[in-house]
Length: 231
Image 1 (tube, one colour):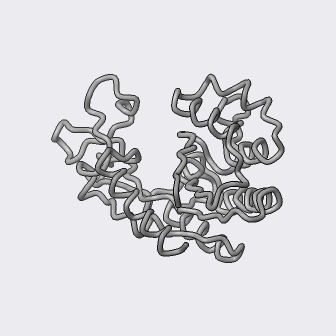
Image 2 (spheres, helix red, strand yellow):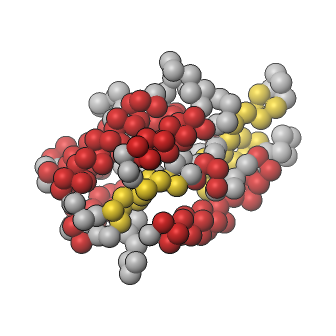
């Protein structure tokens, strides 16, 4: 691959969220890919100012891109769907809709789905134990992020879409949270209010979901290896 383009929209999910008043709604996967494959971007253009500067830059680049020239599109949704309480069926339905749109509009472009990675959720003061996405369930269906990752993987196999198990293979865990996750102890950090103290009593708080520079480097190296192994 000669070039890599970063079109990430932080905070988006693959399945459209319930709150249609949120500017993120129009950048959730189904709505985003519908806009890009049809060329009708009115709603995205009207709401992009409510997103980050990086998201605004990525949206401008996406609109200018001829996706038919691409060799591969990589999708990495799932963790925000989990946090919003979406079911595995809802997530896979959204992914399948996206697969169909890409296949119809850009038939020569290959697709790769990365499952979501592990995340630290909180510290339970009652049990004095950390809880994470292996065990914490969300939504009425009561599913963990591990279960969502497994569901995405199995669905992609059925749909004949290349998929990589990032949840198992990106080696983040409680023991290396201070190494690979964003330290949000500094006042004013966007994740400060949701920071998790690690280790407990240290006075150092981490996002538990957003990787730092070392984490992003590690993640990118693993994903690069996966892409080269598959393609």
